[in-house]
Amino acid sequence: MPPYLAVTMKILVVGGGGREHALIWKLRQSPLVDKIWCTPGNSGISADVECLGSRADDVLSLLAIAERLRPDLTIIGPELPLTQGLADELTHRNLPVVGPSQRAAELEGSKVFAKQFMERHNIPTAGAYGVYDNAVDAYTALCSADWPLVIKADGLAAGKGVLVTSSPDSATAFIERLMEQREFGDAGRQVLFEEGLAGREISYIVITDGERISPLAPAHDYKRVGDEDTGPNTGGMGAFSLEGWLPPELEQRILREIVHPTIAGLAQEGRPYRGFLYFGIMLTANGPKVLEFNVRLGDPETQALVMRMDFDLADVLAQAAAGRLDPQSLRWYPGAGVCVVMAAEGYPGGPRTGDRIEGLAQAAALPGITIFHAGTRRDGDDYYTSGGRVLTVSCADNSLVSAGARCYDAVRLISFSGAHYRTDIGKDRGSTTLGGDRG
Ligand code: AMP
Ligand code: GLY
Image 1 (tube, rainbow, N blue to C red):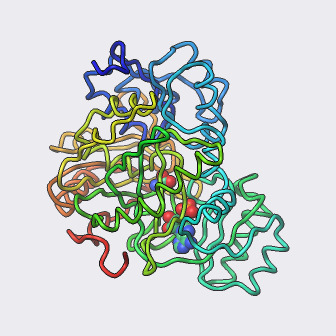
Image 2: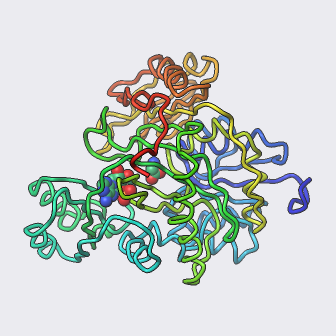
Image 3: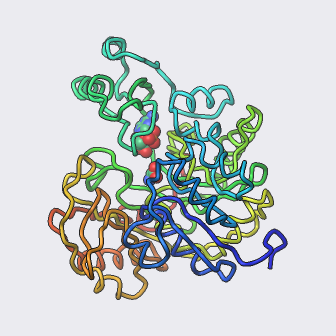
């Protein structure tokens, strides 16, 4: 038994999406774990572990659950309870936790804070044009904007509060939705205008105990709803993680120019960071630049990454929570992990729910396929859709092409009325690596 563990662990996972289902799938493989609870979970997770009812945004009830169970480790999946201070409350009660404090979580909770933080610490990012707290000023600023323009709601909007556009009409309509109709509530009280960057995007996620940093394997997320990156942004429609994708010199540059200054800057500002930190990075012709921070694992990146994890996740997370992360602990299976999200009709807008899902058992029976649930509801032996991103199909194999092909074999066996998914996950990247003139 490692020294920071007295006995096998009881773990509480907070969240109820595909990301949490994937984490739990991996945690269940650990001999160090003897009990896992999840709150609120979902109907796929409840087939694997005990789920406890609570809303992911109800910190008081999450806290009451944690106090009653006294888990050896709590892993907070989604951003909302982190920005509401759940990790701080658990720490005050001596409950070990993976997830940053409320002050550190502001990196995701406020895009204006994140931009100013990057400016303070010289972290490369898209140039900021302005911050507006009323629609009239924002409309006026459009008259002198450079295009393409990026408009961002300051607060949390489930990946849907960003518009990249060259159209003044679309920009005007988006500002109206954010600031006048308040489609994302208070998240749209302020908006940030920034420079549009071109390049390839990577999801670079690290786990840190505040001092030591272990990068996860880099991943790529497909954010737009449609093939070939068309249509509106979503929370993510699929992802891959591919061995050798990010050239080592480019990774070193990301660590040197972005990751280390971020962790050090947070500590210096009295916001020490512990947990997963996700850097959304654009590889531009002028080097890597930060698009966004997430104070958590990505969804669906996690559903691709867990397929390649060749280490004991429970052990690594216990190390991080105890402030004694061993950066040598992470190992990755070679080849590729791929995942494809199946979404409900209407997503990323208001999804239609209640459609019966067919073919789950046949798809899950295919070799190497794992299905992670998100928006599903179980009734007897049947599953029905209950959210926008319904489920994720994941697979690992020795190449991106074969892992992707195996995912799609499974996806084609699953059906529900209005189902849609991207058909190009992993396909356009072949076995190429990044870098070259971009780094
Ligand atoms: P964010 O929530 O800030 O990551 O934005 C969501 C998505 O919008 C990113 O993953 C990018 O695809 C896109 N995006 C954000 N900022 C920019 C930018 N400055 N230039 C180009 N695309 C961007
Ligand atoms: N897939 C991007 C995110 O989790 O925000």
